[in-house]
Image (cartoon, rainbow over all chains, first blue to last red; front, side, top):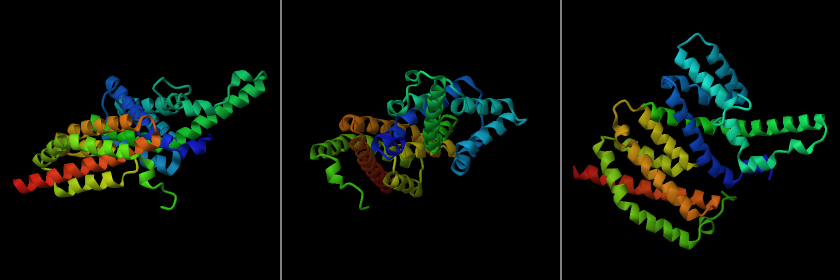
Length: 156
Length: 134
């Protein structure tokens, strides 16, 4: 099954509805357990930026917000989001680790240990990274729908 | 619409029966929710908004997210009063859908959709009934 076929499957729709939802909720709770709460307004721009600029636009937003001379708790939030989405390999609870660990995605990744040449290993690593990022880009809007709504609920 | 699978072929009659029986069992809980939503002071428009969302949602989690969002932005505390009850009931419905669906994605998604719609109908009916009684 190709990534495109997987995206069109009922199995993927169920993945968006249940495991991805649970993962985003867990990430919110992890943040709230170990950080000072931030105002909901910090999250309001996320869906629009993802819709308009995709992964790249979202990365720009996160990096800009991290650097802004603002409250420390806000900086900590954007740093948390950076680790959650962009850090490689990323923490255990990160979106990248979670997606890469999905059996359907695992089936699509090539095994770099099967290649004997370093050049070929690098090619496989690059292709695997690109595949995970393609899946992340596709999933990102719904992931942040789950993330934001759960944050608003928990921060009530 | 041409590419959509006819509903009857998605679910076996035995599964449709299980859905009906579960909704029958769930009835007292839905009554409680409808009454609570009325007592919390939620207006007709908000109840109809929830029902419309349940009917049009393409994902079950859209319903869950809608409720969380309503609770999060509600400054009068009306949704806050019923939010956890609604979310608990949706969690039960999701769990039951997975149980009936037996690991089949297409069936589980359809069961969730049907149970959510059935639940919303019951809740709205009892909200409206409560409104007339008072």
